[in-house]
Image (cartoon, rainbow, N blue to C red; front, side, top):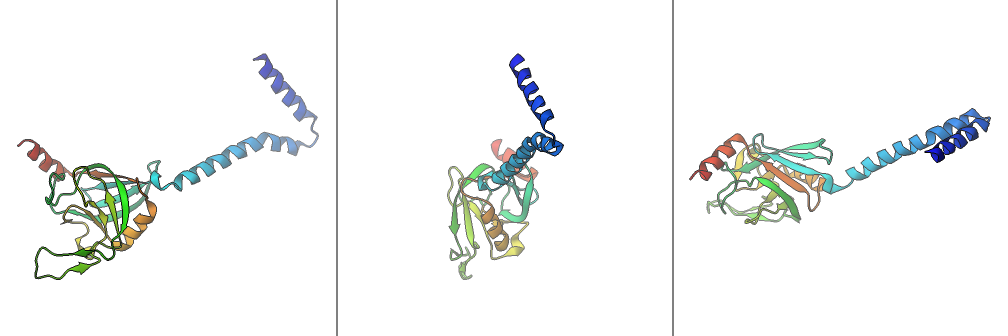
Length: 201
């Protein structure tokens, strides 16, 4: 403690010997400016990390929300969900899975073809939009966030389990995220009621 006091006394005596008082203020304030600069730089660098984005999909309001690492909402997009309510239990149940997942691949899907179940309708090239953001769902394959050829389906339960978006907005989302981005899908009350009734069987 005595050594620390001696150091402070030496600094004080040095400052008092300086005749130009503006230099004193520079010496005093310079460390604070440096700390502020580091704080701003640190936050800018954090925001540049794509993994710091988190996708939260709320099945109640048909929204895909993008948040920063500190909880700030960055973007919100309207989506379509699986036709049927409840958590995905088996292949072909047309339910959107619920839980915490991550993006495992970002694929060019602009030339993918969708074949309607009704064979009287022609195939649609580009039905999945420009990109397919594949999410890893244990026990299932082919689940992801993709575009659509039918924007009228957004805001509805219309898909086979994937999350549909407007193609232009999907391109924005694709630039915001990277592999490993966390995707959290939250059930609505109606989904929870279906889940509870199935669990009681």
